Image (cartoon, rainbow, N blue to C red; front, side):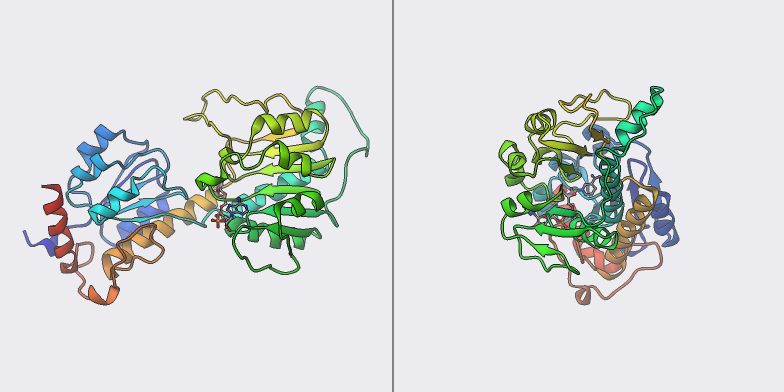
Length: 356
Ligand code: NAI
């Protein structure tokens, strides 16, 4: 069979959003969807003949999987992280990797704002008391957020969006970032993390998960925070020493905390959650749902599916996680709708050679 008449085959795992399926089917691709993750052995069985593989965070794309992937052109992580993919192996095999780095930014920023207001009004405690039948009507310890200073550590996609929303609610914003970042609106850049900690009423972490950020926020940083201030982490669990956070809360130095991410998180829904922070009344705990909204899932689905389509039709690898970058101009030919164009012939031949 002529290679330019091969229908594009897509395998989507882990209940990738239906908007992705619609986008790919509209191109005439053959899409197979699987609701759960596949383990290595099952993925090795399913991967031959697949051109585009879509996963979320639980499917591991290992070097062995790639060895069996005789036709794979791209892997799409329908999420932010790509730790589950052996990126060296994908680069070696010439497989392009995409993710959705900023599709759930707004959802995280909105949850942070909700938690800032909840903590400032002590809503978690009031709610628990009401459910226990206690009418605790008092203004003590409850505040407005207007005029308070929010300290954002990590002024990237999420940090900057949060900065804009917080200012619109009347807050003052400071930020600290290890990279040079332009201050949006009236936000104030802090030269050091210490300066931010000492001057903020709230400290919220939005740093990335690079190795050097492991436990970078611990006893010393909590001590630097203002007495009675509040702490949030919606970035990565490994960034924070949770025992030190517990001490800062139980000693009364911090008035409260909201934590969405944990050093060890349960594998699946319904599994037991263990943490030093359980049982503290002034702590809001959420199961890593910062980015988990229907809107974010739909945007992610469309975003990554469109990356697939642009790659197949135009050779466009913009915003890919790893090389190879393909120059669109060097891939001018398109196949018939829903099929692999002749521009992929050379690439698939190379793959055949690698997996033989
Ligand atoms: P980003 O990469 O756009 O921004 C991260 C920023 O942190 C960068 O500007 C970087 O220079 C800065 N940074 C890194 N280490 C730092 C440090 N030690 N001190 C100060 N600045 C530092 O990332 P984005 O998209 O804003 O995401 C931020 C975090 O949120 C990531 O860790 C991501 O995994 C997490 N996230 C959590 C979600 C949830 O469900 N809770 C959903 C989406 C993202």
